[in-house]
Image 1 (cartoon, rainbow, N blue to C red):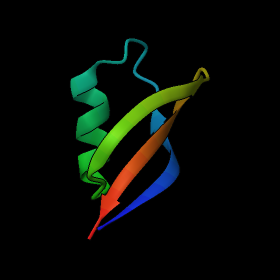
Image 2 (image 1 turned 135 degrees about the vertical axis):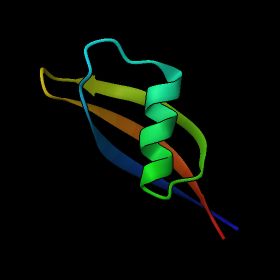
Image 3 (image 1 turned 120 degrees about the vertical axis):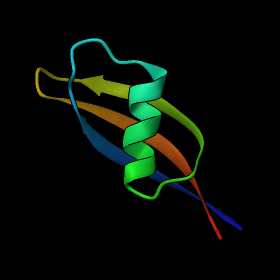
Image 4 (image 1 turned 90 degrees about the horizontal axis):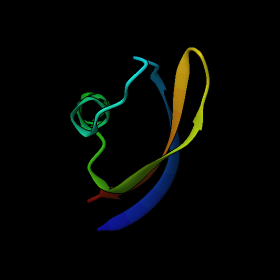
Length: 54
């Protein structure tokens, strides 16, 4: 198993929730060990993700 750090852009929905962010990561086949929002724009969130890959 490997841990790969990635920056992911997710559409900004004004009030981010844990459920929304994790749902978007799951849609992209990302199995997050941890994640954090590192940048917010009017249109996107940039999320730093530690992705577990087998």
